Image (cartoon, rainbow, N blue to C red; front, side, top):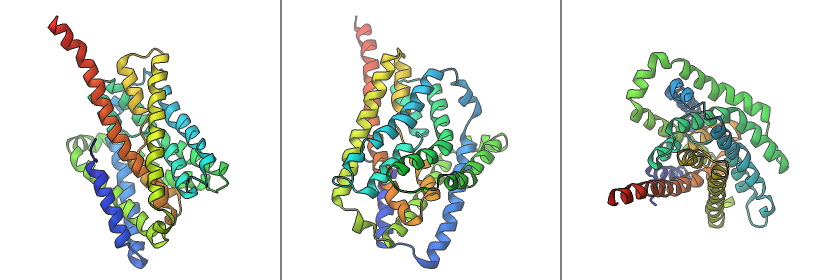
Length: 325
């Protein structure tokens, strides 16, 4: 139960933006650099996606269906159930950030890593997490538009989809089509590409929070709001994890498939969520919109790390017993 190093760097970047926000002409240049960084980020996402690994797990359609329902149906429904808390108990701006969080696709790297650590079905996890990431480019803007419209706010869904197609989906497709040419280099330099991905996210966060600070984010968001985000993130994650365990056992999935459903169906992607927010929302509101996502991201890593070790320990117990006998 320790802080993820990348999350610590994110906190430092938010602090830097709060103390030294980029403004004026500098902010314009940083904005252009951010668009290039996001395009590179999704280009590399496409280049890293192995079609062979993706196709190898397609046979587990029931598993993928459960994961997609958890990601794109259960999460949004739980988000909408928080509506009675607004505005007496929950800041409306923070609530919109939770709705955005609930509409996002699953992570890829951490879902696969935790599935592998816990002894789950890794090939199905690769397929499910990758498919969720791709579908999220189309589904997330639609879900965000539908949920925020319910709250009386306005989001230009069609404009968001167009912007995402041009700024995110196009680089992703070009990257994936380029894999036959650069795939070997990409696979052999994954640590370097991982650093490039993280740098792109940090840049987007710095620019987003700089604009938010200029617009007075810390006058609208206080310690009570941060505590509310932590509490609701824990409750939301606990409910989704509990549902995934229950439904996978109810439907008769084996232990390895249950592990895959638990970890692929409970994650929300920071790598996709921050750039998408930068495309979908006005610059002044991006910082508030991604704040719940940043906190939820850290909580999901901490909880799932403990859960993965617990699955692994439970798997090892029968082996030890049988050797003793």
